[in-house]
Length: 141
Image (cartoon, rainbow, N blue to C red; front, top):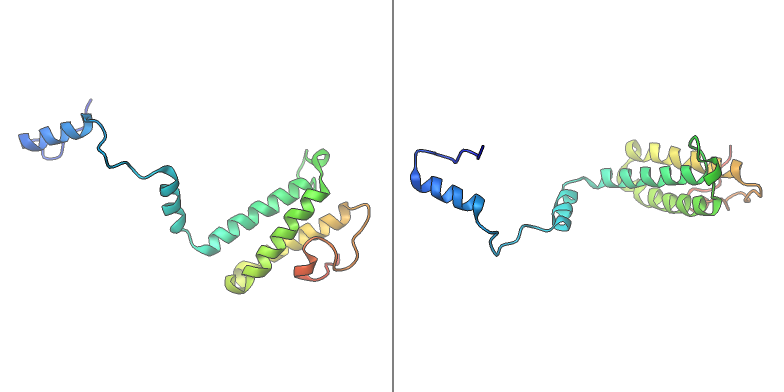
């Protein structure tokens, strides 16, 4: 069943409508997928973007630390260190703009990962030398 054209009693409108749905695309190309994605992203508040990427970094670090069920054999502390370091830099740099309400849970998640890293390490880092601690200060259990 074909769509009903707007104002079906008008023959000219019907012909125009049918031509528009059956004709070849015009020279004006539709926005590319990347442009559409960029427009969608532009509508998301910066706080939500930082929260989303921080959460993704936390999840990736937790997987590298083997904290999820079934990921113990995937543990890679060198990779976890890089992710935690990047997360600490992101949170520390953005916290003043995020405000306490948004930054506090991110800081708590970061601290949890830093402590988990310390527990997983066979050779412990010195105080202030663990992943992200140059940004957050020493983390103690």
